[in-house]
Amino acid sequence: MQVNEYKPLIVAFCCNWCSYAGADLAGNNRLAYPADVKIIRVPCSCRVNPMFILRAFQRGADGVIICGCHPGDCHYTSGNYYTRRRMAALFSMLDYLGIEKERTRVEWVSAAEGAKFAATMNDFAKTVASLGENKRLEDLRCKK
Ligand code: FES
Image (cartoon, rainbow, N blue to C red; front, side):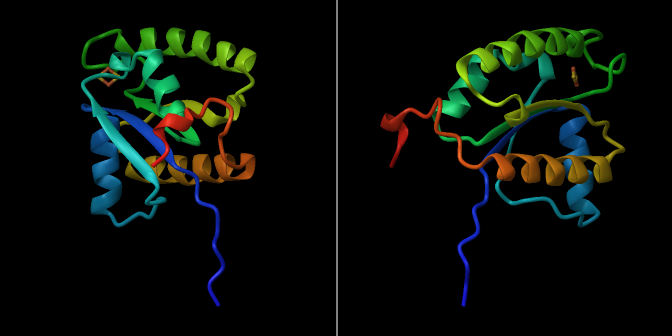
């Protein structure tokens, strides 16, 4: 008998230079992370407009994670510092909207950290699964 287990839909924005390469390394090393993590490659983590995150929640994402280079390692020198500040502001607003803070996360993952990428995604998926489905910001017009 098969039990229908709830699997959260997670959107992961990964910067091209570090985190996306880290995800690649995780794949090459056959490190498992949930298939429901949908990766969107961006040139730099600072390319992620806060509106992208709200839109992902509207479109049915249960969790959104932004992964970038470690501070000081950004390919564009200071992009991830902007990300850190922007996301801190957005996350405090999400609180105000009633979205649990745990549904979002910023992580620094380098190209050599495939294991960290897989562990981060597994941990984030577990956290989001414990919160259940995201219904607060969901736009019903986006439902199929
Ligand atoms: S290039 Fe990776 S965070 Fe900027």
